[in-house]
Length: 245
Image 1 (cartoon, rainbow, N blue to C red):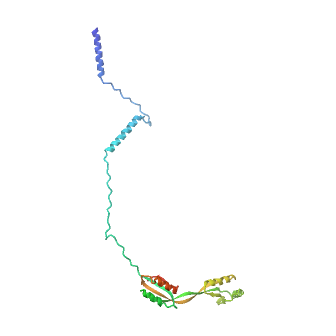
Image 2: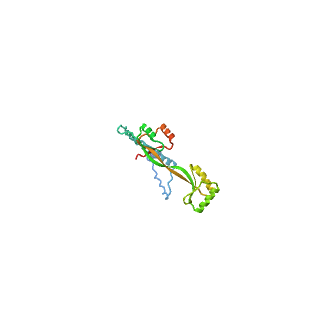
Image 3: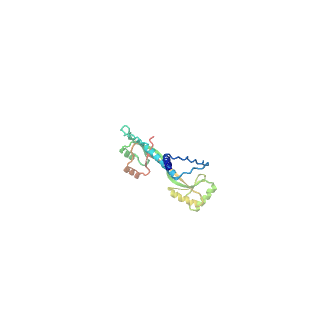
């Protein structure tokens, strides 16, 4: 009986030892029920952070493995030094000769002195004769009117003490000729105060004059001192540049 107990005990120990060396059974994976349409699966925060870290590490390794690309240097512009043949120097342009006219010179004054003065300065000048119209006075008058109206006007003028009148053709009444326009304006205003519209008309006379023409000259024909002397003798004389055509 004692041997039977020992035998059973030995068998139990042997079974226990055999059972310890056998691999453990792996439980079958759990099958989750499918999610309804439109519902996203639940992701733990630890799983999401682990996924982001993995993607960042993969991007870093890809950047380190890529070889850097060195930019190509920009091409330098070629500097061209100007040569004597490529630079065009401005040519000296000579001013064309000018033409001048001096006048008008009163025929009562001999232009020979001025002509001789210009010749001494080296100018080639020619004398030219002409005529101009100059004011000789200012006439105050009343336009033509009927004989009855002229008789009325004459009577009114006499009553106002104005006897220097003259009745001309078509009963045009002259009220005087004056040397200046200011004096003529005084007579005009006096007649207008009598309710007559008096007018002023300039009178001219023809005068013989001379001009001195200079052609093809590069310089002004009169110097400052010479011109001041000429202006002192006759202030109507002027020096003008004209066309040479």
